[in-house]
Every structure is written in C-alpha cells, then in structure tokens.
Image (cartoon, rainbow, N blue to C red; front, side, top):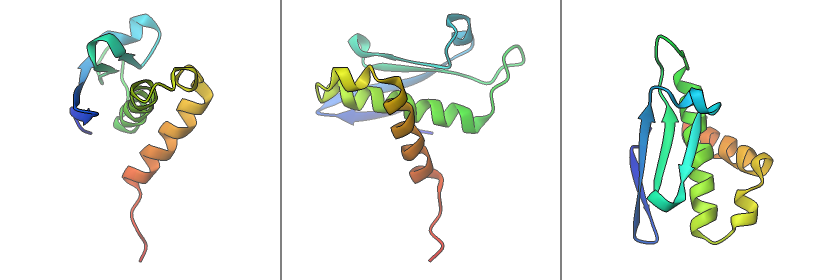
Length: 97
C-alpha cells in the first residue's frame, strides 16, 4: 500500500502504528495533521495485510471527503466503509480480459 499521496496540493502521509488498537480502532484520519495512521501487524496485535489495506482505503475516503468539504459525508462511517471497500476492491482486483 502507498505511504503518501497528494490532494489539492497537500501531502497526506500514511503511517503505521504498533499500538493504535489501544484506541479501539485500526485506523485514524488526522485532518489537522494531514496524516492517516494505520495499525500495523504485530505479535501482540496480529492484523492481516488485507485488513490493513482495507483500513487504509477507508481512511483515504475520510481524507478525500474532508478535503472536498463534505464533512457530514465523512462522518457517515457506513458510507465511508462502503466506499473504502469499493476502493480496495478496485485496487486489488485484476481484469479477466
């Protein structure tokens, strides 16, 4: 998965954390810092790569919506999760043609 991207000329960094699970989440979008945090796979808290990538996509959707000033949509976790799943599938699926 990527470790940064630009949107509207702003650099968004994606960083892994060993103990994010202690906040009872696998990912966080920190809009004031232009940073996405994602739980990494550890011995103490094992997470498979697919879940890490899905979580990253979920947080990217939060970032996109917030940077586009759609804050109410960004607050809709069900919508963000659905769009994150769509993005993840788009990035990981292979064409059969």
